[in-house]
Length: 77
Image 1: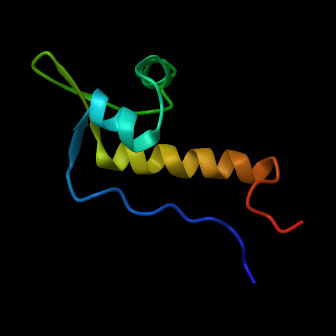
Image 2: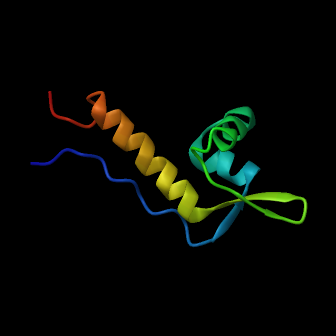
């Protein structure tokens, strides 16, 4: 039986504020901005607002899971 973890779909909205992404990802504001600067989490600008697409959040979670699987997370012992 495959024990790999698959991420749940991000809710149906298309864009999230940094504050909302912070809650969805259970990360601090500074970590969100660090991930944005590093190019690990995508975002768009609408006027002065920085928004994070649902697709970028989904891809970021998948990337985290993939990185964790490389180190042994999600595999049966």
